[in-house]
Length: 214
Image (cartoon, rainbow, N blue to C red; front, side, top):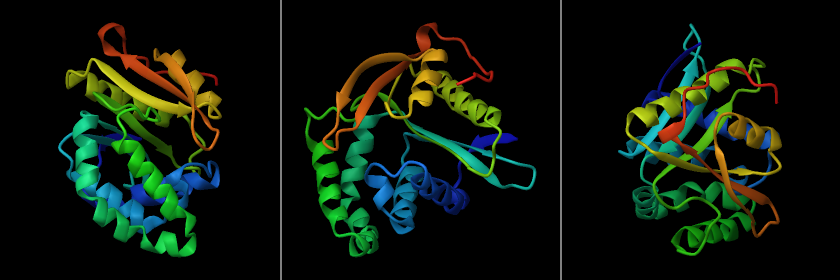
């Protein structure tokens, strides 16, 4: 398996991988939005100067997974707000299929605007999505891909990397703790999901590329 930064030509692969997540994890706003929205979303991210997305691909060029982060959440949110009409249009087909998506979108947008909202980290660098193809049953390349992203962020002088994991993904929470992440606190979302706020502190962390038994 090889690793590199995601390019615009990878949009279709990234969208398909992200879309397939709903089959095993049908929670959150993204599980209700179709590929039109995801395509628009990742086109915006790839043009964001603070966005860092790493993918894993095989000798045939097939992308098996990706892991994303942003160096400046505050600027990212401003960028997302500037593209709100574009996102609204791209979500139109999802709304037609499921009208309640419109309320979810408004709720998500208002949460981003609300300074007091804590459902995601709102400052500094932030780890975002970690997606791996269900067709690839080998976990080691996925873990290495994640570590490649962490090493890039460390080399870019990121000191603290914030992120969130829903507690229902207990194996992922366990992995991050084994990999040196620190749990900050837990919160309960409006839909009753418990979310764990965590961070990596690169000031005293060494690279840990190895397979953990989860």
